[in-house]
Length: 517
Image 1 (cartoon, one colour):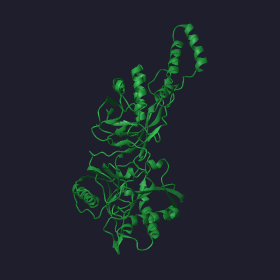
Image 2 (tube, rainbow, N blue to C red; image 1 turned 120 degrees about the vertical axis):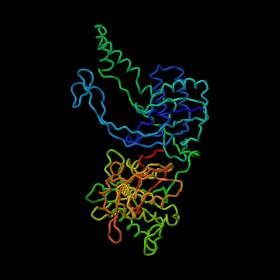
Image 3 (cartoon, rainbow, N blue to C red; image 1 turned 90 degrees about the horizontal axis):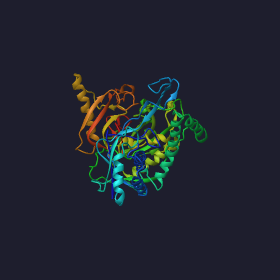
Image 4 (cartoon, rainbow, N blue to C red; image 1 turned 180 degrees about the vertical axis):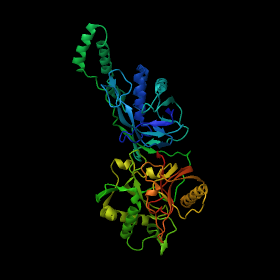
């Protein structure tokens, strides 16, 4: 067997997903790790034993992966210097005489992975004569991904100390990871074009030397062989992928959950006609209220309590259907616009009632959502780039591993007014109210929670609490609301919907850092 261990020295992994550069790639694909090993080989003398080891490794099947939890950080655009250009620039910085370096926007996707190590494991591999070369090569690897993604890497012939959480599986595919294949090392060598690059640099050095005969010969060779242009280095593109599925980690306790099913019913919201390109998050009550009324009309008569939210002539005291918005938040460019809507159902719903709701949702999807002055909007199923971010249910539920830190996207609505006069006591009373609301919806007595009350959301792009319309009681009095941050004692799986507005789109919490599993 063979195991490669990787420890991120700064606790951060910086590597962009090839399909969406604003998202971090986690766990690192086996193909990316192989390219890091190949780079170390090419940069340190190209030892023949290392080459033989890499050619053996590229023939192996996809490895099992044991990766720690990863919390994605919001991708922030930074302006960084690029290659030297002749002449002055708008914002020159120190460089060679006569040259300047412009700053260009770059977005670096990164995630916090902590101190735990990551392992790639081949249980049936027999490295034998290649192990020593692989071990030496691993010690030469300094980064995986971006140059700031510093790592320590090693090889061993020992089993994993805990089950892998990603397994090669083309049947239960949950993600596709790039993997090495036969001939990959030669392909990388060709893309780098090292022979031509080295020849070009040698001619440039001769052209700039003191020997006039060599200068003339070098200029002629540069014109004829390279036409005055440096040879091209191409970025490698790995086309071969393998399906992976989550493995069962028996060492991790099952995360706590809420009374709501983490399997959300998600729809994208697309304008059909109306004055606005996107709906602002402050329109939450209009969207969820109209959608609920439309669903009830399609459900017909004798609607069960779990779908209607009513029992007799009054509101239901049991968990029932909740509708909430899915806004674009958590990124530097976030605008807080509503990109979709989600329907959360109680875990106790029967299959009969679930199928009845699905039929009503399909009828509503065909009809469209009519929002009066806000126009008509289509409810669409999965697809497009945005679906991989805002409209992915895992980003709102942290399923299956859960998350410990959650923050409001829409404000939490209090069941009653706080009565304390002292500011500190008032804040403590608000926090205790939110804590009691959590006690009503969670399903594990072992989870404690720390509450931080704040007037603004911790998620970029979400409006401040005062920008949301107040929820009204039946007597037309207004309920107070606020943003908040919850820090749980152990991971929690959502959706986390709290407070008096939890069935109408308010009190919606989202993981503070979207966990990639």
